[in-house]
Length: 199
Ligand code: GDP
Image (tube, rainbow, N blue to C red; front, top):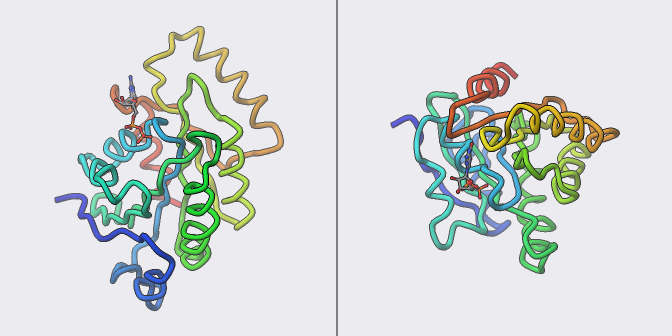
């Protein structure tokens, strides 16, 4: 199988045990972190990139608020799926997740992370919460690849005007790369794979 579920990190105490000599749960391959608001299309993109249905595992009860780890032999990377953010304007659970668990994991594994792929819906994003997340990763020195998903839901005219708007929204934020994709039509997916596996 191209993607193998490894484990889930649910509390900071697990991190030290999982991370030994830069190996994460026994894997030395570089990490690619996936982040996005709930419903952004993160799971669909992950499935399209890895050509599996692995991301549905992250949706199982008990895993939605954890950092879920997969090994993808196709990409030769450890895929780190972060919990979705931005629902109900930063509730307590979400603040705790980002303030403690995610921050602790990212800091501990930072030098092994090649890319952060931040997914946002091309019809609406990036929202303030996406820009906040981007800033969080950039301040830690991590390269961010912003993916605007679901472009099949826009016609050419809408796509062109969204591209202009997004450029303005991103002014002063500058992600390292920007891609426009459709996981359902397979558009832009190969380009993202190429980017994140060459980095
Ligand atoms: P997540 O919560 O970020 O993991 O989002 P999902 O990947 O589960 O997607 C949320 C919804 O958007 C689902 O109903 C998907 O079928 C839909 N979706 C995701 N990607 C695409 C896409 O490229 N095109 C279209 N039309 N729908 C998509």
